[in-house]
Length: 231
Image: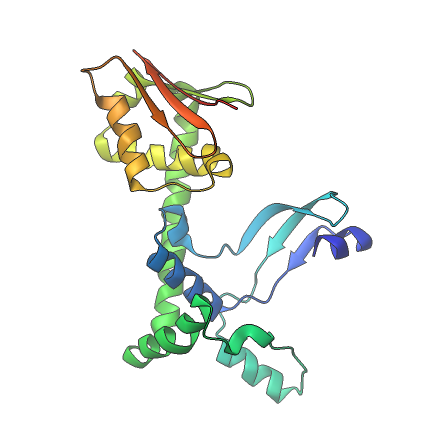
């Protein structure tokens, strides 16, 4: 995609992801484990930096206008208007989890409730709106909660974090990880969230440390928690 965008000097990429793709993605995330942000499924609009084979970065507006339309509806449309389309040759293989979800799980769920895809789309939209609302609230307070250490990390202000309610503190920690750390860590889980929350709240030991993935480290010194890369 990046090569085509660069060659055509385009900035918008429109994909044909449909409601079945949305359902498959969310089911896989639930099976493997996901986050608050992950419950939103596939975004209808996002901005990405794609990289060409030559290493050139291409700023891209990624648009998915068909997420409310099912695969069956698209196939009926293509047949009615005699449109040619291509089917990925790996779609029939049961080796991939996505294909097993597509072939086994989704048909069963739709058999239980024919409105399953529409209901799931409504749920992911509600999750996306809830995340966005909490994200906006967090960003309005981030300069009081977090201090950037240039490109090498962050400092969390413990007294300010401890003033938050338990539910808001954990929601804000989730958003901080998702928006500020996930690109460096690669992944995280509930255990990491619990450990960070404990470092904020624990008053017994003023100095504590915590190893993170990819050479990142958490160090608590009294009222500050430093999160930085040790490499």
